[in-house]
Image (cartoon, helix red, strand yellow):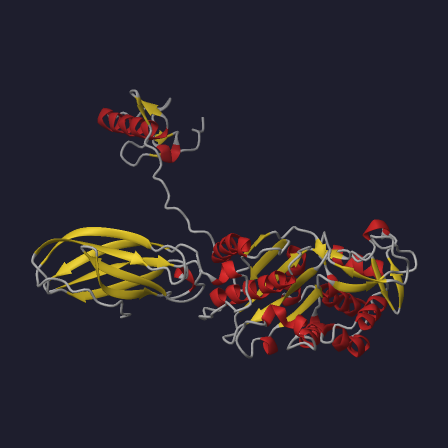
Length: 471
């Protein structure tokens, strides 16, 4: 009879029917010592796997908490800052890093009017159906000048408004829809303009996905991609068309492809032949619209070092137009500062007062105090949420007296929100036990934060209070 497959013991010549487990079963080795050894080994394995002699298996070691991806940390801070923009309405932000493909958003699913931001999609849809030469004639006007007539011609080149919608759906843009475009002539979707007339819609998630697919060469491919990016790159004709890059360093706009859309609160609107105003105004009357205002944009933002990311940001249905445009500009600046690792001051004098007051409370931790003869060194990390990429000030105290200052400064993307500090301070005070503390200093109008204190033995002369100095 052929024995079952298993491991043959080199000492006894007997096969171990349990293979690599080495646990005795029906076949027993002749060597009793070896048998007892194997039995003990199996008992140990069993104890570790289940329960042995009333003792439960040892629990698995707890894993170190994993820090969320950088884009998620940026989004969390932007979400916390959104409350500083009064009257901004509904907001959305979506970020996609093109180097890691990491993405994050908040409010990314909020449906907003697309306004002119959708014109880039329509030009891409035209390229999907026609060649570059046919589209180039209208592309600059549609993307640089944001011409409504040129955008309508892009829809026509794409095969009509429902062909544009099919193109968007094929790209997975589930909330992007063109219902009507009344420039040149009335283009109406067969799938229900109805009460949504004029409310062409999108989300920041959809816009970001579109520009990501452009970057990957999927939305426009081959010989079409480079011309498309060129048409959408550089400063636009109107300042409102540049909100996405307004606070970024010089030269970034020239290397970035993007498209904005805007419908300001308080804008004029002429009622169409089949429309009646909210107060009974008749067709042909010019009314002032305060509802459904939107400032929204998206694109591929490229830093001087060649790194790039996709950003889509919008504010919809707000009542404070200044807050809405400040939101778009501030978000773009903050995201760029972090992902491009470039210190930027993202605040402007016309931003909402609550934002300019810089009331966010800094965080951090004192890791250690190392004492040597005549000096001591403090190390740790600190971060002021009002600072995106830049220094967060700290102060060092001895027995409550400020003796020195320092800065927590990021070294790269990995520690942008946990910027390290290390400061060595000479000590000539009285010998004995003293309390050393480190404080994260709020550089605005908010509270400072004590990061930690240590009682240590120092040797020297009485401390003298000194101004905070950066080392």
